[in-house]
Length: 219
Image 1 (cartoon, helix red, strand yellow):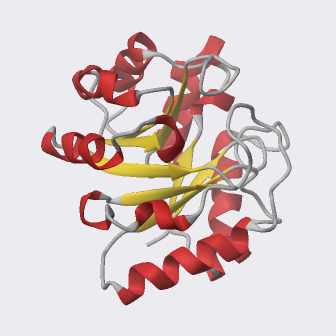
Image 2 (tube, rainbow, N blue to C red; image 1 turned 30 degrees about the vertical axis):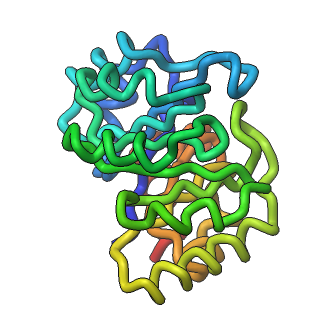
C-alpha cells in the first residue's frame, strides 16, 4: 500500500497545530520529521522538543529522518520523543548495523537513508535489520531542489534486490515528490512518499485538497 507522509519541515510552523489538524482530517498516513544538525548538512530544523509537541498533536505515526553526524548518540533521545520510525544516514555513521539494531530494539521501525550518489551495496549486510530504505532523490539539507533523474533507476534496482531476498522492506522516496515524479517512483517500486512543497505545502489548494490530489497521482 502506498502511503503519504507530509514533511513538516515545509509546514507553517507559526500555525503547526492547524496544519496537523487539517492533515489528520485529510487522512495522511504518517508525518515526516527532518532532523538536521548543521554538520552532516548545512541546515538546522526540527529538534526533540518540537517532536514532543508534534507527538501531542496527532496519533499518526512519526517518521524521524536523522540528517545528523554520528546518530547513534541520540537513538534513545528520539525513542523517548515518541517516534515510531527512525532513519539514519549510511554516510553519517561507522556503525550502521549496530545503530539500526538498536532502533529496532527500542521498538521503532529502522530506516537507512542513502544520498543520491551512495551505492546500494551499503545495504548488503544489514537487510535483516532494515524495515525501510530512504532513497534521497535530491541532496539532503534543503527543500525546493530538483529531482535527480538517476534515482529512478536506483529505486528500481533496490526494489529488485528486496524482491530477490523475499523481504518486506519498504522504499521511501524523499525530495521533490509531486505530480511529475510520483508516477515513475511508484512504477519503480516506491511505497512511502515524503510530500513537501511539490505536492502538499503550497497555496494552490487547501491542505485537504492537496492531499486528495496527491492520492490521485498515486492511483
